[in-house]
Length: 310
Image 1 (tube, rainbow, N blue to C red):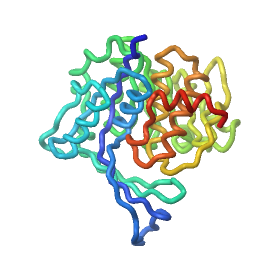
Image 2: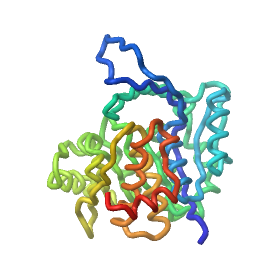
Image 3: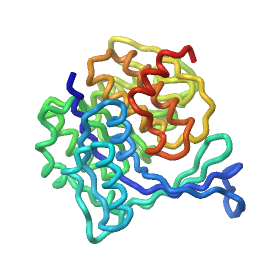
Image 4: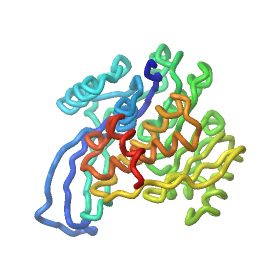
Protein backbone atom coordinates (compact mmCIF):
# COMPACT_ATOMS: atom_id res chain seq x y z
CA UNK A 1 0.00 0.00 0.00
CA UNK A 2 1.43 3.43 -0.91
CA UNK A 3 2.30 5.75 1.94
CA UNK A 4 -0.29 8.50 2.57
CA UNK A 5 0.80 11.98 1.55
CA UNK A 6 1.08 14.31 4.56
CA UNK A 7 1.83 18.02 4.23
CA UNK A 8 3.39 19.86 7.17
CA UNK A 9 3.84 23.61 7.49
CA UNK A 10 5.81 25.11 10.32
CA UNK A 11 9.00 25.85 12.15
CA UNK A 12 12.45 24.33 12.15
CA UNK A 13 14.88 24.97 15.01
CA UNK A 14 18.15 23.69 16.33
CA UNK A 15 17.65 22.68 19.97
CA UNK A 16 20.44 23.34 22.46
CA UNK A 17 19.66 21.17 25.47
CA UNK A 18 21.02 21.16 29.02
CA UNK A 19 19.89 18.28 31.21
CA UNK A 20 19.90 19.10 34.94
CA UNK A 21 18.49 17.70 38.17
CA UNK A 22 15.91 20.48 38.06
CA UNK A 23 15.06 23.57 36.01
CA UNK A 24 16.86 26.72 37.30
CA UNK A 25 14.81 29.34 39.10
CA UNK A 26 14.94 32.99 37.91
CA UNK A 27 18.36 34.47 38.71
CA UNK A 28 19.84 31.06 39.59
CA UNK A 29 22.85 29.38 37.96
CA UNK A 30 23.14 25.59 38.18
CA UNK A 31 26.40 23.80 37.38
CA UNK A 32 26.98 20.25 36.28
CA UNK A 33 24.46 19.95 33.47
CA UNK A 34 24.94 17.75 30.41
CA UNK A 35 24.81 19.60 27.07
CA UNK A 36 23.61 18.21 23.75
CA UNK A 37 22.19 19.58 20.52
CA UNK A 38 19.33 18.11 18.52
CA UNK A 39 17.17 18.99 15.55
CA UNK A 40 13.86 20.53 16.65
CA UNK A 41 11.13 23.07 15.91
CA UNK A 42 7.49 22.03 16.19
CA UNK A 43 6.90 21.90 12.44
CA UNK A 44 10.06 19.93 11.75
CA UNK A 45 9.34 17.60 14.68
CA UNK A 46 5.88 16.85 13.30
CA UNK A 47 7.24 16.31 9.79
CA UNK A 48 9.88 13.87 11.04
CA UNK A 49 7.40 12.08 13.32
CA UNK A 50 4.97 11.65 10.43
CA UNK A 51 7.69 10.38 8.10
CA UNK A 52 8.93 7.82 10.62
CA UNK A 53 5.36 6.76 11.41
CA UNK A 54 4.84 5.82 7.78
CA UNK A 55 3.86 8.99 5.91
CA UNK A 56 5.07 10.40 2.61
CA UNK A 57 5.82 13.87 3.96
CA UNK A 58 6.36 17.25 2.31
CA UNK A 59 7.47 20.17 4.49
CA UNK A 60 6.87 23.89 3.92
CA UNK A 61 9.31 25.95 5.98
CA UNK A 62 12.00 28.64 5.94
CA UNK A 63 15.60 28.12 7.08
CA UNK A 64 18.53 30.50 7.33
CA UNK A 65 21.48 30.17 5.00
CA UNK A 66 23.71 29.01 7.83
CA UNK A 67 25.21 25.91 9.43
CA UNK A 68 22.03 25.14 11.38
CA UNK A 69 19.94 25.36 8.21
CA UNK A 70 22.34 23.05 6.36
CA UNK A 71 22.17 20.50 9.16
CA UNK A 72 18.37 20.65 9.32
CA UNK A 73 18.01 20.14 5.58
CA UNK A 74 20.35 17.15 5.65
CA UNK A 75 18.27 15.64 8.45
CA UNK A 76 15.02 16.04 6.51
CA UNK A 77 16.54 14.36 3.49
CA UNK A 78 17.79 11.50 5.66
CA UNK A 79 14.16 10.95 6.77
CA UNK A 80 13.07 11.04 3.10
CA UNK A 81 11.03 14.22 3.55
CA UNK A 82 10.19 16.21 0.41
CA UNK A 83 12.23 19.42 0.86
CA UNK A 84 11.30 21.19 -2.38
CA UNK A 85 9.17 23.75 -0.51
CA UNK A 86 11.76 24.62 2.13
CA UNK A 87 13.09 28.14 1.49
CA UNK A 88 16.53 29.44 2.47
CA UNK A 89 16.71 32.96 3.91
CA UNK A 90 19.96 34.92 3.49
CA UNK A 91 18.84 37.77 5.76
CA UNK A 92 17.84 35.94 8.94
CA UNK A 93 19.42 33.01 10.84
CA UNK A 94 17.73 29.68 11.34
CA UNK A 95 15.57 29.26 14.44
CA UNK A 96 17.15 28.20 17.73
CA UNK A 97 15.63 26.82 20.95
CA UNK A 98 17.34 26.75 24.35
CA UNK A 99 15.98 23.90 26.46
CA UNK A 100 16.40 22.93 30.11
CA UNK A 101 15.38 19.34 30.90
CA UNK A 102 14.86 18.30 34.53
CA UNK A 103 15.53 14.85 35.93
CA UNK A 104 11.75 14.33 36.07
CA UNK A 105 11.53 14.77 32.29
CA UNK A 106 9.81 18.17 32.46
CA UNK A 107 11.29 20.97 30.38
CA UNK A 108 11.54 24.75 29.99
CA UNK A 109 12.08 26.23 26.51
CA UNK A 110 13.01 29.62 25.04
CA UNK A 111 12.90 30.12 21.25
CA UNK A 112 14.54 32.61 18.87
CA UNK A 113 12.34 32.20 15.79
CA UNK A 114 14.74 33.56 13.18
CA UNK A 115 13.74 32.55 9.65
CA UNK A 116 10.56 30.86 10.92
CA UNK A 117 9.04 34.29 11.54
CA UNK A 118 9.57 35.20 7.88
CA UNK A 119 7.51 32.36 6.41
CA UNK A 120 4.79 34.26 4.53
CA UNK A 121 1.41 33.63 2.88
CA UNK A 122 3.18 34.23 -0.44
CA UNK A 123 5.55 31.35 0.41
CA UNK A 124 2.52 29.14 1.02
CA UNK A 125 0.88 30.12 -2.27
CA UNK A 126 4.14 29.35 -4.06
CA UNK A 127 3.91 25.81 -2.62
CA UNK A 128 0.31 25.22 -3.74
CA UNK A 129 1.39 22.29 -5.93
CA UNK A 130 2.05 20.31 -2.74
CA UNK A 131 -1.61 20.45 -1.63
CA UNK A 132 -3.49 18.36 -4.23
CA UNK A 133 -3.36 14.69 -3.27
CA UNK A 134 -2.31 15.33 0.33
CA UNK A 135 -4.45 13.60 2.95
CA UNK A 136 -3.76 16.07 5.74
CA UNK A 137 -2.10 19.41 6.45
CA UNK A 138 -0.46 19.58 9.89
CA UNK A 139 0.37 22.99 11.41
CA UNK A 140 1.30 24.70 14.68
CA UNK A 141 1.77 28.33 15.80
CA UNK A 142 5.55 28.82 15.58
CA UNK A 143 5.12 30.60 12.23
CA UNK A 144 3.05 33.76 11.62
CA UNK A 145 -0.71 33.36 12.01
CA UNK A 146 -1.51 34.87 8.57
CA UNK A 147 0.70 32.16 7.04
CA UNK A 148 -1.14 29.44 8.96
CA UNK A 149 -4.47 30.90 7.82
CA UNK A 150 -3.32 31.06 4.19
CA UNK A 151 -2.33 27.39 4.30
CA UNK A 152 -5.66 26.42 5.87
CA UNK A 153 -7.50 28.20 3.04
CA UNK A 154 -5.48 26.37 0.40
CA UNK A 155 -6.13 23.07 2.17
CA UNK A 156 -9.87 23.77 2.10
CA UNK A 157 -9.65 24.62 -1.60
CA UNK A 158 -8.00 21.27 -2.36
CA UNK A 159 -10.08 19.12 0.03
CA UNK A 160 -7.21 18.50 2.46
CA UNK A 161 -8.01 17.91 6.15
CA UNK A 162 -6.42 20.49 8.49
CA UNK A 163 -4.87 19.37 11.79
CA UNK A 164 -3.92 22.43 13.84
CA UNK A 165 -1.86 22.07 17.00
CA UNK A 166 -2.35 25.47 18.73
CA UNK A 167 1.11 25.54 20.24
CA UNK A 168 2.96 27.39 21.59
CA UNK A 169 -0.02 28.42 23.68
CA UNK A 170 -1.67 31.40 21.97
CA UNK A 171 -1.81 34.69 23.87
CA UNK A 172 -5.36 35.27 22.63
CA UNK A 173 -8.22 33.38 21.04
CA UNK A 174 -7.71 32.21 17.47
CA UNK A 175 -9.74 33.91 14.70
CA UNK A 176 -13.11 32.18 14.11
CA UNK A 177 -12.43 32.29 10.35
CA UNK A 178 -9.38 30.08 10.92
CA UNK A 179 -11.10 27.72 13.34
CA UNK A 180 -13.89 27.10 10.82
CA UNK A 181 -11.24 25.69 8.46
CA UNK A 182 -9.82 23.30 11.07
CA UNK A 183 -10.77 19.62 10.84
CA UNK A 184 -9.00 18.61 14.05
CA UNK A 185 -7.69 20.94 16.78
CA UNK A 186 -5.18 19.37 19.19
CA UNK A 187 -4.54 21.63 22.21
CA UNK A 188 -3.09 20.44 25.48
CA UNK A 189 -4.78 21.40 28.78
CA UNK A 190 -3.05 24.79 28.98
CA UNK A 191 -3.82 25.69 25.39
CA UNK A 192 -7.43 24.58 25.73
CA UNK A 193 -7.84 26.83 28.77
CA UNK A 194 -6.30 29.83 26.99
CA UNK A 195 -8.56 29.32 23.98
CA UNK A 196 -11.77 28.85 25.97
CA UNK A 197 -11.28 30.21 29.48
CA UNK A 198 -12.19 26.76 30.85
CA UNK A 199 -9.57 25.12 33.10
CA UNK A 200 -9.18 21.46 32.12
CA UNK A 201 -8.87 19.27 35.22
CA UNK A 202 -10.96 16.18 34.43
CA UNK A 203 -13.14 14.58 31.76
CA UNK A 204 -16.07 16.90 32.45
CA UNK A 205 -14.05 20.10 32.05
CA UNK A 206 -12.26 18.65 29.03
CA UNK A 207 -15.61 18.02 27.38
CA UNK A 208 -16.77 21.56 28.23
CA UNK A 209 -13.63 23.12 26.74
CA UNK A 210 -13.85 20.94 23.65
CA UNK A 211 -17.52 21.80 23.19
CA UNK A 212 -16.68 25.51 23.39
CA UNK A 213 -14.18 25.03 20.56
CA UNK A 214 -16.70 23.09 18.49
CA UNK A 215 -19.06 26.03 18.93
CA UNK A 216 -16.41 28.21 17.26
CA UNK A 217 -16.45 26.04 14.14
CA UNK A 218 -13.88 23.28 14.72
CA UNK A 219 -15.05 19.83 13.53
CA UNK A 220 -13.17 17.69 16.10
CA UNK A 221 -11.17 18.53 19.22
CA UNK A 222 -8.52 16.27 20.75
CA UNK A 223 -7.17 17.61 24.04
CA UNK A 224 -3.85 15.95 24.81
CA UNK A 225 -3.40 15.17 28.51
CA UNK A 226 0.17 13.87 28.74
CA UNK A 227 0.45 10.45 30.34
CA UNK A 228 -3.32 10.33 30.86
CA UNK A 229 -3.92 10.13 27.11
CA UNK A 230 -6.16 12.33 24.98
CA UNK A 231 -9.76 13.49 25.24
CA UNK A 232 -11.71 13.18 21.96
CA UNK A 233 -14.83 15.23 21.33
CA UNK A 234 -16.95 15.95 18.26
CA UNK A 235 -20.62 15.83 17.28
CA UNK A 236 -20.57 12.01 17.15
CA UNK A 237 -18.40 10.83 20.03
CA UNK A 238 -16.75 11.96 23.25
CA UNK A 239 -14.40 10.35 25.74
CA UNK A 240 -10.89 9.75 27.03
CA UNK A 241 -8.51 7.55 25.02
CA UNK A 242 -6.03 6.39 27.70
CA UNK A 243 -2.29 6.91 27.27
CA UNK A 244 0.53 4.40 27.67
CA UNK A 245 2.57 4.14 30.87
CA UNK A 246 6.31 4.68 30.44
CA UNK A 247 9.19 6.19 32.41
CA UNK A 248 9.64 9.72 31.05
CA UNK A 249 13.15 10.94 30.27
CA UNK A 250 12.31 14.06 28.23
CA UNK A 251 8.84 15.27 27.26
CA UNK A 252 10.15 17.61 24.54
CA UNK A 253 8.25 17.01 21.27
CA UNK A 254 5.81 14.47 22.72
CA UNK A 255 2.92 16.57 21.43
CA UNK A 256 4.61 16.97 18.05
CA UNK A 257 5.11 13.23 17.79
CA UNK A 258 1.44 12.73 18.67
CA UNK A 259 0.32 15.07 15.89
CA UNK A 260 2.57 13.62 13.23
CA UNK A 261 1.57 10.06 14.04
CA UNK A 262 -2.11 11.03 14.27
CA UNK A 263 -2.06 12.48 10.76
CA UNK A 264 -0.57 9.29 9.33
CA UNK A 265 -2.99 6.99 11.16
CA UNK A 266 -6.03 8.96 10.00
CA UNK A 267 -4.70 9.18 6.43
CA UNK A 268 -4.38 5.40 6.43
CA UNK A 269 -8.06 5.09 7.25
CA UNK A 270 -8.06 4.36 10.98
CA UNK A 271 -11.05 5.67 12.90
CA UNK A 272 -10.43 8.50 15.37
CA UNK A 273 -10.11 6.35 18.53
CA UNK A 274 -7.75 3.98 16.72
CA UNK A 275 -5.69 6.84 15.32
CA UNK A 276 -5.42 8.39 18.78
CA UNK A 277 -4.26 5.08 20.27
CA UNK A 278 -1.57 4.91 17.56
CA UNK A 279 -0.55 8.53 18.28
CA UNK A 280 -0.56 7.94 22.06
CA UNK A 281 1.83 5.01 21.58
CA UNK A 282 4.18 7.08 19.41
CA UNK A 283 4.17 9.95 21.92
CA UNK A 284 4.81 7.58 24.84
CA UNK A 285 7.83 6.11 23.09
CA UNK A 286 9.16 9.60 22.38
CA UNK A 287 9.30 10.64 26.04
CA UNK A 288 11.60 7.73 26.86
CA UNK A 289 14.38 9.42 24.86
CA UNK A 290 16.27 12.71 25.00
CA UNK A 291 15.77 15.33 22.30
CA UNK A 292 13.03 16.36 19.89
CA UNK A 293 13.49 14.72 16.50
CA UNK A 294 15.86 12.03 17.82
CA UNK A 295 13.00 10.81 20.03
CA UNK A 296 10.46 10.23 17.23
CA UNK A 297 9.92 6.47 16.88
CA UNK A 298 9.92 4.41 13.68
CA UNK A 299 6.74 2.73 12.45
CA UNK A 300 7.91 -0.74 13.45
CA UNK A 301 8.56 0.46 17.02
CA UNK A 302 5.08 1.92 17.30
CA UNK A 303 3.45 -1.26 16.00
CA UNK A 304 5.42 -3.42 18.44
CA UNK A 305 4.54 -1.14 21.35
CA UNK A 306 0.85 -1.24 20.46
CA UNK A 307 0.96 -5.02 20.91
CA UNK A 308 2.23 -4.77 24.50
CA UNK A 309 -0.13 -4.56 27.50
CA UNK A 310 1.40 -1.36 28.92
